[in-house]
Length: 348
Image (cartoon, rainbow, N blue to C red; front, side, top):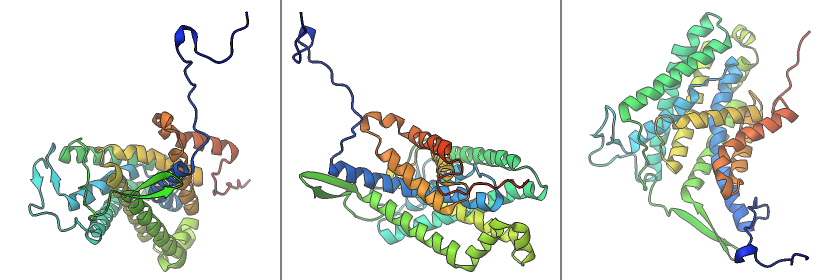
């Protein structure tokens, strides 16, 4: 007997639909995903630039960058809120009983963000003095400097936990002023909601990328940094203080890392002292994807990974973090030097 087509499964139950990957996408969902991807991708870009700057100058990966990312978030939170009521040595402290003067409007919050990021940059300078300069002075292998930066990262993370505990913290709802939580507009008969914080993140990231691009490409500091990155010995012979520009590089790297930490925590909260570790690994994926030592590559890599994560279907969101490394694996198979990296020339 031929089985009838269609109808119900045996027992009167309808056959279960197979899960789909959501290839067909409505314009409203497409726009929503683009906004999400550009917002988080721009943060990945500025965070990865901190890695790129140090790698360009010293040829090493600074694994303490994830800890600086976390520090930036906590420092800005301290300036905006000043309350750590749960655990740690600072339990119950309230730095601003009458309310923080650096919260409640965009300009004050912007100042708090700049101060928190600048403090993160100064801490990065201290890290360079303690963990990297002694290694450079002895001519140590880059691997030893990498291990040293890992040790510094663990010390910083544990100090944070000792001071404020392992709990999560969130910025006040009106930290950057009284704005609507989301802006909505219609695409056809669908409503697209864009969170205000996403617009803030994207705008700040783009401004910072523009400023950094101008500094590196048009100013004397940027030209000196590029000369040191190209050949430190020759730059020294030309009268450029290599040590001074190494410090400037670490400050810029720490500033970018602290700013990225603040922007991420503004959207998702501070997920404890270790929440910078995942972003540290993502930053590494970004710079390798874009091309080691390439500033445009870091920007492109961050945006590519952010957009790739945003387009992961909701049913598979648990695998979103694997997207960056799967994409990295595929690109490295096809183009080992990264998207905008230059192939290394072997001298024989």
